[in-house]
Figure 1 (cartoon, each protein chain N blue to C red):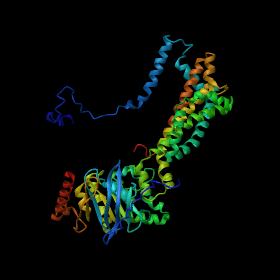
Figure 2: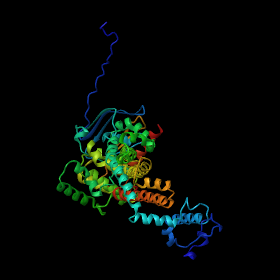
Figure 3: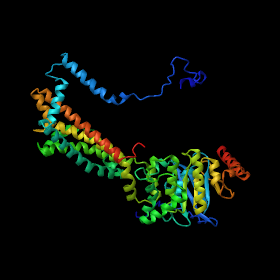
Figure 4: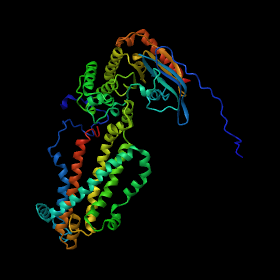
Length: 273
Length: 277
């Protein structure tokens, strides 16, 4: 009676071979699976995100645009799969994250400048190093407001500028932006958009931008990643190669309009599907 | 200014019934006097009721006499000593509750499993009137000064623990995520985010706790063999029908509670300067 009669049966499931992305890939996502309330949001999702590029994520409501970047940034746990940054795990990668809701992203008990310096203090940098980096950031962002104020004393645009500075302070390899403009007025949106483009041209930081505004998504992007309805897959990746710096004139150029039109077509096809 | 607005510019849904007023909103200078209207009215009614004989002066002394007794008593009279004793007991109880309660609440709140496992106890005893436990505390501590402080501490402690713990549990998730994405460790998140997030609810807890401590101290002074304190004074004056002194003591207790509350509000506004913004 020591024999096990109906022992568990193991099926031989071959682990799929890891396929690296094309040359210049920064973030490699393989077999990403995420369930929400028992339903698949992402199932076996593969994606390569290129280095030194801005990728805008666009897709139907509820397809999990923000969830995707939150999973990559490690804010939302994944159910299965692998996400690598230049072959490294998230733990070995410096990232920056800009939230949509700057009010609840900055720490109101710290002065704005201390908020911006906070990630550097976490790294254990010396005061001199921190001060040097702060001076650099203030110069490159051309800050016109008083950073010694508390965040709640600043305007929305100033607060979002501060959150972007905070995210960029430790010189991240990847910058995640989750609808960074949607809580801002038009003037501030334009301003911050230009700042982001400047920073990108200076540093070439890989950026992942979630946007619900197609114009914004295309304007900043090297690639527009269009997603389908859930279970979410890649509908299409469009390359947009207009030279930087892009300006307000870019918005009326044929290539830009063409790009927007194409994105919209794919978007509508996916929404109706 | 009024003639610059033509009839056409007037909104069509107010056709003359309510004549629009074009006067610039001026702040009446007596706005600042508004808070005093209530107390003054109370004193007038109180005075009239006594003067017209609706209530016998043996039950309710005239307000002027009461206030005189209060001022005389607090200006070095025996009332001052009882006031000080009650204040000291309340502060002792409150300090103990704060020193134990805030750290305990913050630690419990940051470990949700730990909090869930004691949540029922905290809620149960928080809902139990602490005065119901006076006999129990009598058995443990005897008829002593410590007893009064201990039971007030107990009542105040639960309020502090509850509020601090919920402050941490309900901390804005996004700030925690922001710290995490910047690479903060659990301890760093606790030190730099959770404690700060819990400050405001903790202050709410501390403010309720100081009121609770005062209530329990007064009750304990009344019923646990005591020879000092406002509670003792109130009950003694009542026994000998010294109503003037009784009302003066009641007003003194009220003033203490009110002042403590205001002090806490001021401290809160100072320390939690971001609250509500």
